[in-house]
Image (tube, rainbow, N blue to C red; front, side, top):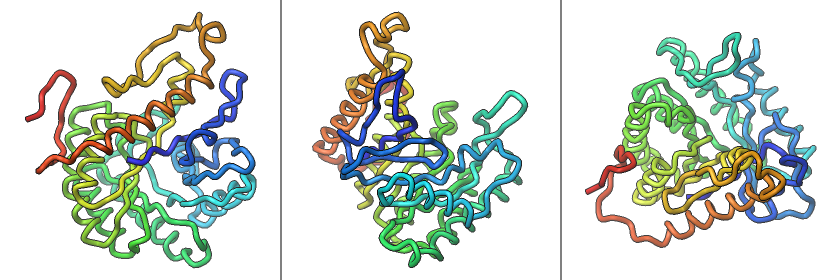
Length: 304
């Protein structure tokens, strides 16, 4: 599993935060005013900013969304290795209290899925103009049927050099049913993706390690290279949380009184990045099981 660190800030509590100095795999978003250190040999993917557009009255056109990415790229001064299509999130809503995680209804989901497919097609049609930049074609769905239909529609025009993006599962930790559905989608989708000649998938905004581990194992068994992005190392460091490789979770280590007098968020975030990167390196050396299908394994339960 390749871990792309979502960098949302250049500083944390007043100290520089530069994960690109310890990993070449970064995820940036045009919504955030982040930069990269000069002369860094970074391979970053550039998100579309669709998550931050949920609360806006009008979404951008596909052209404007792409131009926003390219203008941000110019500001960074380093060409993105991959661009993400401008999907329409099915698991994010907004009301007078702000943005929150909840799936839209199935009929609204159908409309969002159509927009998501059209956005992916638009990016594919711009392939020649985008040159060496790879494409990550995001998929969505409010249920398994919608999700698989979205993937199958995008596979009709995707090319072997593209990456299929799995969106809509930031909500996974909210319910075991969402997690169960995620595994069902992965189980059916990965063979289809492989049969279409595509070798890469990317999971957006996922921080649930038991799900990521099972995804990685099943991807490798299907001849697919899997990657994901999350801002968890950065965000959790602000609250004194550190990654524990023994249970593959972020655990509270420091309290508020220790901040600046025991730990600094920026330093803790960098340590989190190193610990998670090392976790995936070690997991990669483990032999694959003879047969494996992703399934729901909660803490305290044993797998056969």
